[in-house]
Length: 154
Image 1 (tube, rainbow, N blue to C red):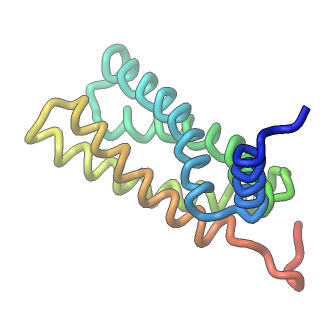
Image 2: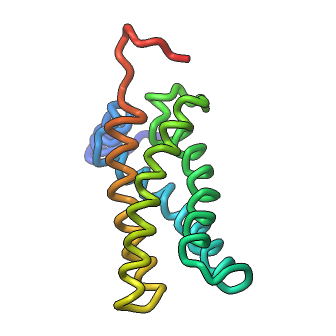
């Protein structure tokens, strides 16, 4: 059974954009993976704050590290699968962690400053948005940039 012409055309365009890895589509995929990781990050953050530590910094960095590792795996296998070949590599993970360290630094600074002016949950929400913008930019343009034909894949 085939799709009606307008739907078939839409499907073909979406499929082509996915194959070509358009930036907007990658950002959407990155955001969807990020939603999962945001839930993991927030759950760990608030559990640590409630039961293990009163330090915003320790709770935020620990929650980020767990979520960031899951994010690397999911993004390598989905969002940036064309660039990674669907493989996990130590070099890519190191770059992903590096970009994440920049993002978690921005996130931590944001949550600490914003928590002075608003409830912690709101400060954390703003910090998540800051982290997304920083992390996607570095991940897309630096860590998982398309590899040239002369660059080795290993």
